[in-house]
Image 1: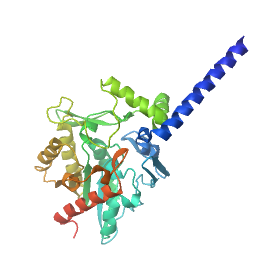
Image 2: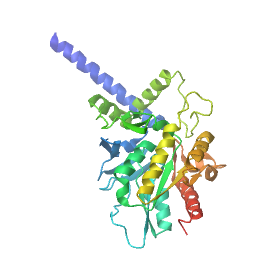
Image 3: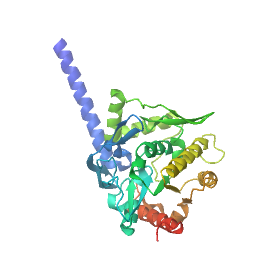
Image 4: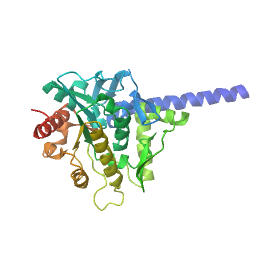
Length: 344
């Protein structure tokens, strides 16, 4: 009887596995929009200070229905070439901080905006220290503890609207992360050392990064918990909290983080410059109000993209910029840096 029961259980397990396998194959074939998001996380490792960071020396292919690109992480933990810490005579140095848009999600390395700028301005070394998913809090910590070693003349912070929300969370995209709170004495760092995720979390991460079907089920569950009906994924910022929306995150922490980053840059002999990806007007206004008194040059990139069809500069199944979008951003950033007298 035990052998018969074991046989039936094994048969049932095999049938379930076969059904799930067929469903996964069908999803990959018929629903490319269900593709796992943020597969760049395969190049991450746990970091007790930052939550996650690039795995030095890691390389591989980032596959998506819209693209397949090569990713190589240097020994310095950058999606960039190796830079000696000693400055090259006669060359100035710029450090870029940002998230997946500055990292170049879905785009070959030589087509990311900073690589385009460096090719056009050989008197500059432009170090791309962007990491997908980072908010201003992680960017500040990275710059303080690691970015200053590159001795930059200029720090370009590539701000994305969702950074405001990132800065208020101790967990983002399912990953534990550091968080700053505003206390009586200013910014107070919390959740550091960042706890290492457990086995259950690592299994869920594996499924999220590899299974079309599991991603769709998770997305449906999240929407149901939020009381929303499942909607097709769209390459837009629609749904981001706007003025008067109770869900709108507080900007005070972000403002304090920007002030701290400006101070750290100045102490390191660098000038902070901020550009922002297109987004809600209230975020542009909040950035302008914060950065103006700090004497930090700021340029939103909304005008560079305004009037262009989204299909020209975004992927069909992902909101990130394609190579054309990176080129548009590069041209807008270059024009801004020319205005500031940093580029000739």
